[in-house]
Image 1 (cartoon, rainbow, N blue to C red):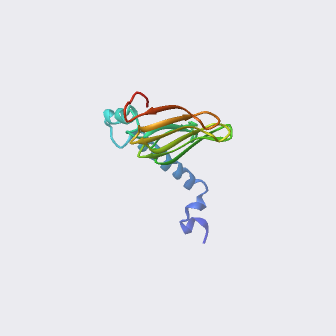
Image 2 (spheres, rainbow, N blue to C red):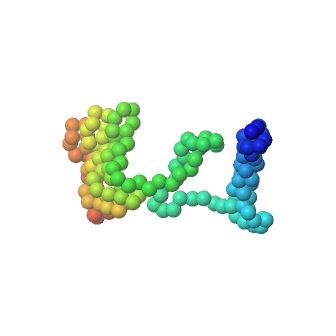
Image 3 (cartoon, helix red, strand yellow):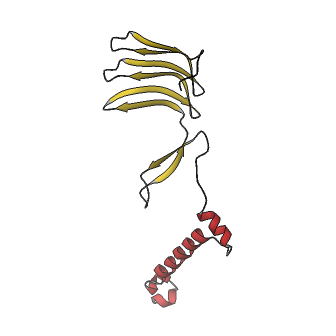
Length: 148
């Protein structure tokens, strides 16, 4: 039995490839324009304003054909920031808000600032230190909310 008699689509050289291309083209048209002839549905899709719901923060990351993607992130868990090879901030987030003790460090690892947050607001006494560890400034956030 020859290739024609088997009904094998691969035996027709290229017909399967053409059909797959047609399927991909049709799929792309459906994804881009939907199944509707309704212009307003297409306009709504392409003109949608995208934003991150609170408390999420929008960030751009490298990805895909355009080179970037916009993503929404909610900070939750330990927070550590570093610069020039050393940790300069340590803290904690809960559902996008600062909580608990936060510490700021100098390049030698000495604490420069120590303070507490509750639900994203500074609370209690905040302390600033010099390089020798001596307190040089205090702000009591139970009395004032002038700083955030």
